[in-house]
Amino acid sequence: MHYRGGPSTMKGFANYPAGVAETVEAELADRIAPALRAGIYRWNIMVDPGIGFAKTATQSYQTLRNTRSLARIASPLPEGVAGMPAGGLGMLVGVSRKSFLGKVLHDDGPSSPARVWGTAAAVTASVEQGANVVRVHDVAEMLPVVSIADAIYRHTHELDR
Image (cartoon, rainbow, N blue to C red; front, side, top):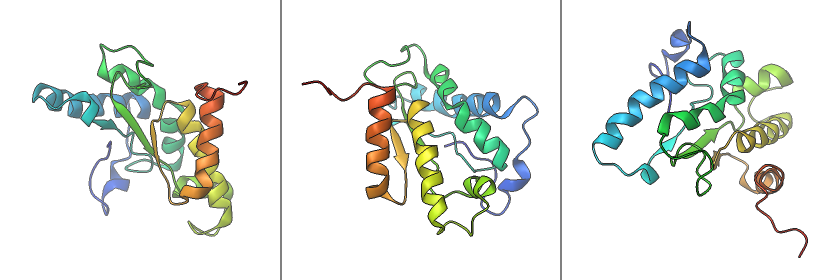
């Protein structure tokens, strides 16, 4: 997972002069490469862009919008091989009820009903951007969201049988 600092210091590390998406990609590549060299199989690695970790709300939206670019960090497998968009690595995106959603929704915090709808939109974007796994609080509510997003973006359902 991409992060900088710890829980109490990460806000101070939200500086990305080269651009947030480019820096997240480079920093994750720097963490993945030694793992692969050490013999960890790529199917045991999940790429997580760390939405909300050492990122402002704007940077979190930029990261979510550019998550697909993480596919480049794990070449040589081309995008889409066996459903693994990140060059053979799984991709996990955690957007559930996060504060960056509240900045747009102007809601009353993570328990707000609006945050569930915001999570649904962000989960859909995560699937479109190549996430294989989404971390959510409201599993039952997000299951149909993921099913429809899969049908739209990945053609995973045989609909006309």
